[in-house]
Length: 106
Image 1 (tube, rainbow, N blue to C red):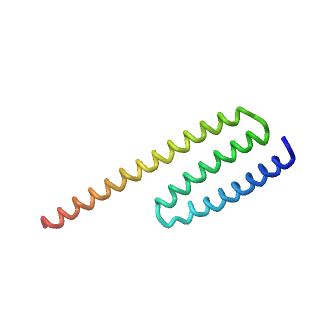
Image 2: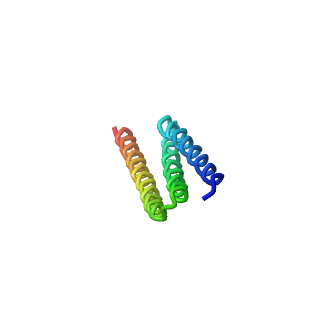
């Protein structure tokens, strides 16, 4: 691999690492839950890109397999978190509806 290509890959790794840090701050600050979910998904995507770049930089093919597994787990985690939040939100709406009906009966 040429020196120029190594420099480009190192630069890309630096930019992606900085991006992960910035997105992590967004995941902590919020303000809404959807912003946090999107930030977590972005961190997973950037981490996948970092692993792929490391695979090319280190000339290790097995890192591509690690990247694929990490991508699948990251996607599954985001889907499960969204499902749990949706169920929680629906349960809260049902609770508030029942509370309102009880208040109207009294």
